[in-house]
Length: 125
Image 1 (cartoon, rainbow, N blue to C red):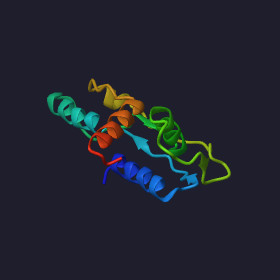
Image 2 (cartoon, helix red, strand yellow; image 1 turned 180 degrees about the vertical axis):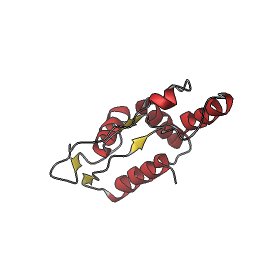
Image 3 (cartoon, rainbow, N blue to C red; image 1 turned 90 degrees about the vertical axis):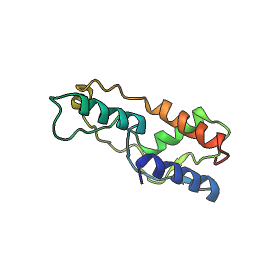
Image 4 (cartoon, rainbow, N blue to C red; image 1 turned 45 degrees about the vertical axis):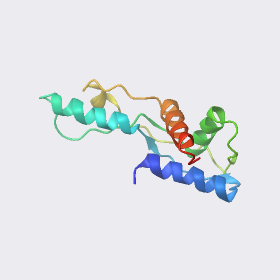
């Protein structure tokens, strides 16, 4: 299961159960369309070799929920983080190698908006 699917299921679970807090996790975000594009770019580039980390951004789950509330204010999601230190340090992943292929990452805000609008259009959210 991809991180996108996992997080969608987590949000749906939190919403259906009336969760009072947000889990303290730091997933690495990438749009599945960027992953597909990276495969094409690597295939077309003769100098491409090895592995490429595809991460648009590392975003704490509470930041994800904040973005969701901004994009979809009618969704009832928790505001409290499930830890006393919700803004503990995160980590970063270099995008330089992937961008050297010509990859332009889709901002996480666009990915979230597109994902949840797609779910709503199918009456899944």
